[in-house]
Figure (cartoon, helix red, strand yellow):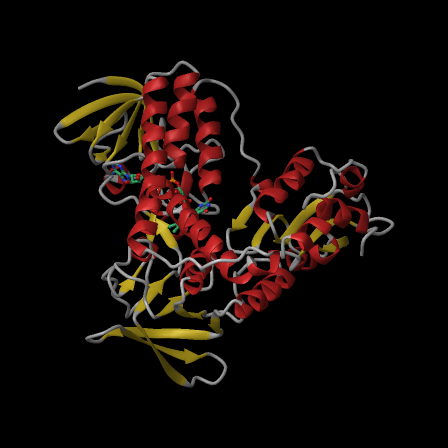
Length: 462
Ligand code: FAD
């Protein structure tokens, strides 16, 4: 038994960042993690392996689509699936080992095993009970499925199974046109798999700016992905080879089926709090299995906090990290804070899709007067030079003050470009502030400036 200032349960981006910052602020910290490696969903089976696969398959696609156009001749590369998987696994190991190094450097103790909270101020790992002034639930989330769909992680898989398929399937049905479904769907489409995405709603990427979503669907369709929208999946049955997805079109109740070697269920994720003993502690829960917290991440039990995917808000690694850092400051007697109005969202397909702040649809519903400045990558010299001129930057500002309310980008490097706008929003900047800032030429970021110019007197290159 040992005693700590803070024990964090879960070593994902929320938990490990919270631990490192709390230790840097002078607290004695332990992290309980049941997996064999640190880093949580994100590093082990989420953000990092999926980005490795997206990177490798993007390069493959480039060699097939664009190399000859630039005079780069030679045999087109073939895929060695085992090697590609090994590359992805190496990337994961490099990152998870990196967190182990950071724990040692910051004197964070790793309590290996699955933890529970037998009483306030106590954490049980195996047979040992440790005590702490602060306990943090950072246990993350797990994939959710649909009624009538049984996951076996072989033929009917979640994203976790999709990252480790024994071979490249000939065909795949992706259920759910959200971020994870489209990223993994893109990976396999580039590897030659025939991918069909089935989505309940009438548009892909629910909640995203409608104009971006429409453009995104058009581009993905050109890349070979097929879409069945407005379709309610009724069930998935497994045969000797592959599986059959049955769905009903919502507009006319017509039933249809799709057969595929592999079915990826990407219908979202739900908080994971099993085995912690929250019910016995009388912890108040929020909607959809979330742990309810106040503005300082504290549950209804004093000294017991929760962050990341386990609580309300977007299930994103950087949201979990920001909460982890803010909570560490609070536990150390400082004033941690997260600005939920400026949390970017990114889809790492080609082209990338990124957004921050409000959409036109939200502003219309609020009845708020706004302006839109838009600039197509077709007018950006750098994007044209590298065959990535599809898409646009759209900045939305308050009609009266020009203050930036949101931005939506589909195009090259969108996931990085969005941060210029995040910083501007944190500083309460207007579009004119961006427009008056010199941007290097030729860069993709000039498209952001041009969209800002378009909020005022007009873009130059459009
Ligand atoms: P997690 O990362 O889920 O970590 C929780 C940890 O707690 C786990 O390691 C678990 O083993 C451990 N744990 C749970 N219960 C216990 C217990 N009782 N005792 C001990 N340990 C326990 N987000 C992005 O921002 N960008 C992306 O590109 C992105 N891509 C993704 C791709 C995929 C395929 C998936 C599935 C997710 C992706 N996400 C992405 C989401 C991101 O992974 C999560 O939002 C993030 O990991 C949440 O962090 P967390 O710390 O709350 O929890």
